[in-house]
Amino acid sequence: MTYVSQTGNTKKAAEAIFDEIQGDKDIKELSELNSLDGYDLCFVGFPIIAFGPNPTVKEFLEKSAAGKKLAMFVTHGAHEDQEDLPPWLEKYREAAVGADIIAFFN
Image 1 (cartoon, rainbow, N blue to C red):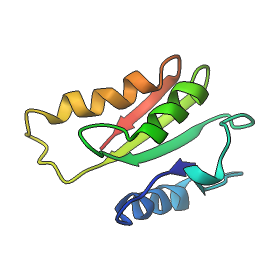
Image 2 (cartoon, rainbow, N blue to C red):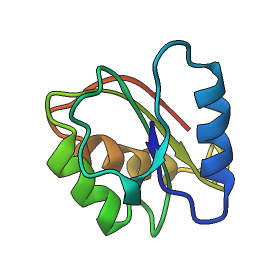
Image 3 (tube, rainbow, N blue to C red):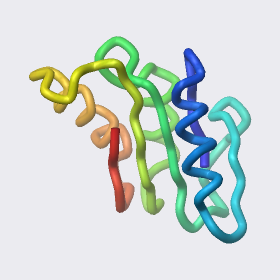
């Protein structure tokens, strides 16, 4: 599991998910991870920043997600009915080009 957290909310979500995962597992901030190699399933979590992924997150996903099985989670303060939310979330899926996204939640 890897994540980026600005205010601590994404970190809390990542830790809660991590605690429920059975078996061998690791949790690392994105800054501690060079790639997703060696992992069968990767949970990746990020906050919405400026209406989508920040450049570091976008670059990491574009470089590392292809061919990987991902469960993605995105944190935000937007209301679930906010009209702009789906396009913002879609930017994360687009950045994870070539990944097998088995779950996506926010």
